[in-house]
Length: 468
Image (cartoon, rainbow, N blue to C red; front, side, top):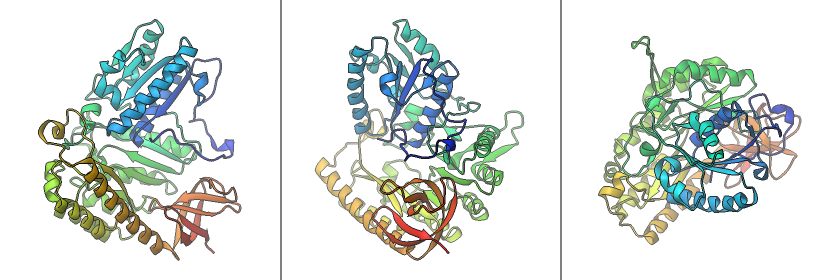
């Protein structure tokens, strides 16, 4: 679960006008978010739309008049958690007669009418491209009708909507630069739940980032299913195009004190132009998430990833040449259809050769209606998937520990994000390489840049002291 982020107690003055404003006289909206960063950003867009229609956002579910669950369909266990949560909301509906429950996002798109058929668990079902219709569907549900809109769009990017920020610290924000995906990876449901790829107007992105800068934000993460294929074409002048490298540079130039991150890159589309822009601007973070999924060319072909092992390693070599201090993270799937022990060993060897700082690692989970579900047999046993995943996790833990040990003695510029959970005498923040550092609080505040020398580490965190 990747629910709405919970942050440590901070000075309330850090919360600026971009955050939701409470008003108990308005009907109350409560929202839970599961899944990726894109879903978090979508929730912020939804709250903005609902606030404009007279709703106030609440973090207290017991005050809610409308409960929305923003869902993920990337793996079956994510959907099962949502089904369980909906059963809990059913009990709340019995206590509060007029309470409405809605499912939005990818699961709404995938399951559609099934959600409305499940014993009145849900009143509203709305897909990722139909959020503008949400206020109307809520009104329909208030009249006793069920509301559904799961139409996918070739144009919708919510470009002009300024999201209401759900972060508590006023430091870091997500900015969506595109929606949808054209990569038909055989295991993935995203193209079916989020539709085709479309890039957002570059000017609207720059305006949103500038608004964040004006409100003292210090970091933005540019979001897309595949940021490297961002390509905005001006409808008034088709010769005027903005690539991702162009956009990244334009965002970086807005303020030298603004840190810029992005996610997610696709190995088949990441080009050297992006890497050279990163090298030119010190405020673009030295961190790239480059999902490999497998180290076996045979598996990559079956996954329809559009590259082989050699191509992937070529992209890694380019990153290390142009950005020698860049941290690299990845995604790994264990036990895809037909994966042999040799394929598995090739994944392990890829991990060792690259030396990932961090990885998201999963067992393959068949998703209905994908090419893999239609054409391939999920023939690796659960027991074998678990064994292979454990080997992948054990290896990555070893590699990550080595990466952290290599940081001891080095000094990094850290952006302070909050107070340490273990001690109010310590702060935490992240380096440009996206590594979490805990260090003495002293007189520093959230949002400050601090130079910290690394003196030790835990399995997940670097421990530092203020650099002299």
